[in-house]
Image (cartoon, rainbow, N blue to C red; front, side, top):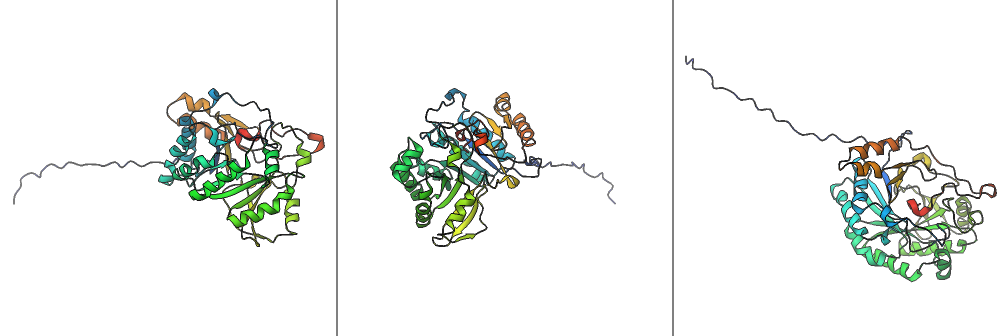
Length: 353
């Protein structure tokens, strides 16, 4: 029997790198934060009466985060499980170099980490950017327009050009994007426009959402006189339209119904009469890096500090978790004669609503 020694054996142990997912963003009330509204500017080329005063003072441009910084912030939220980003303003498409941000964030659509990249716009710049937005992965947009009447449009927006917006909407449709119109319902201002808007949106295949006016920031007019509860509006609409409940959600606060006569979808956003706090999955980030955890409260966190303190994201991620841990349960807006002041001092243009 051969007793020659056995050859030596070399034990090779292969280590596989396993990427441990970051903890998801869940607030103290068990609501997962899956949606961020990212404002890129407080500037706008309109001066809508319910949003801001005509003589507005905007932030110095030097105070705004760069496109690279906005991308880092948005990408940090994507790492933490946020799968929807809405770019807002002000009017986001007036920000110089804005397509750089859309193109950069669009890479998360390609990996599947981000389900939707979208924006809210007044439509004034859409004819210029619609094709490029689609190329960046934007498939659905919200256009803020409160009337289809040219004269009322001018009165509400002060500086807006109706034809330019209509051209923009047509360009977005031609590019292949799904369009939803957002209209702020104002008593005595645009009530006569609701029926024509419902019919037109149904004919065009657009969704339409009515929004209650909100007490955000000082404006020139009187919100009390403009305030129209959507419960009243919905009741009035039922006299002329058949509204059917449907199970349709876009990830935002709107509650949708089907208009039987047109087949179109009609949404209602009711921050006043029936707030949507119990299912709130959103936070708002301003163009200066301030994170607001609630639409109707001033709780915030300055993310610019950890963002600029390190090239890595550890400090930023920790700051985001800390902020979400302070997200309040909800807000309670009030508009009445006794408290004719905004609920919060910031204008809608700071966080895009």
